[in-house]
View 1 (tube, helix red, strand yellow):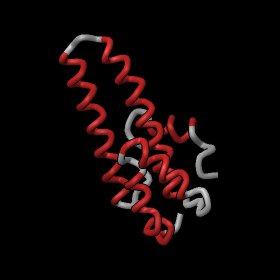
View 2 (view 1 turned 60 degrees about the vertical axis):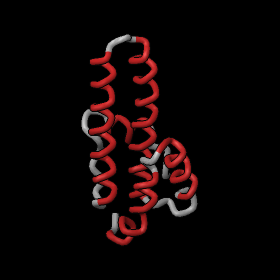
View 3 (view 1 turned 135 degrees about the horizontal axis):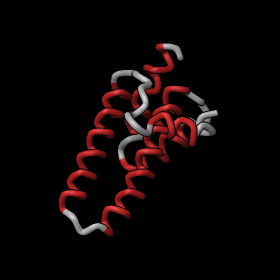
Amino acid sequence: MHQQEINDGKTLAFVSYITIIGTIIAYFMNNDKKNPFISFHTRQALGLWLTYFILGWLISAVDSWYATLGFWIFFSVLFVYAIVSAIGGKTRPVPLVGHLFQNWFSSIGH
């Protein structure tokens, strides 16, 4: 990945983490360019959002304030980590699950 690709893709990489709509926007805007930096962060964002929704649904069934707080802290840390990585021009997968997202959504951006 070249520095020019990273510089060109920072904005869309950031946008991909701003709600699931941002992920969809980044995906479609990157369809023509096929920028690998944007593709990496789109895969990370899609994985984070899908995991967020699935775990959120499961946590909502548990009537525990501690479980809810842990859920919010966990995802806040992962999203902040990912956004800082995108703004910094890095392609670091999010801890614990980032490598899985790259494998599961490998067709995005290719």
